[in-house]
Image (tube, rainbow, N blue to C red; front, side):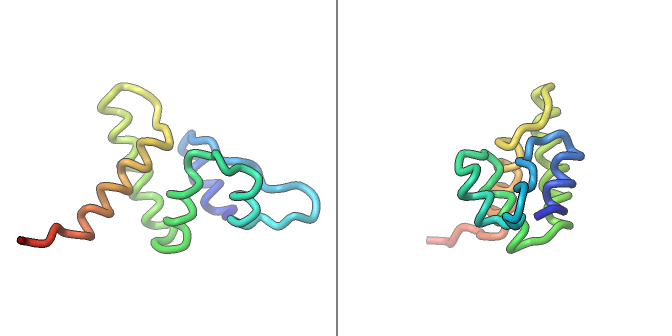
Length: 95
């Protein structure tokens, strides 16, 4: 998770700090500590299923979404970018 945290923070997005003390820096602990963190589901899913290279692509596309509206990137933009990838990888079935 440390690599995801570093990458998204470098791109200007919020990401909770690693837990202090003996708690390990795990997605499970983040989910317990920050259940309302807006990037939690998409960041965890990308980390487990797609990898860091995909994270860079989604962040780039999220920034493009935000730039079109003339504002800073937010987690909603990253989620929108990932949704586009999801829709492209699951083509609609013909009826």
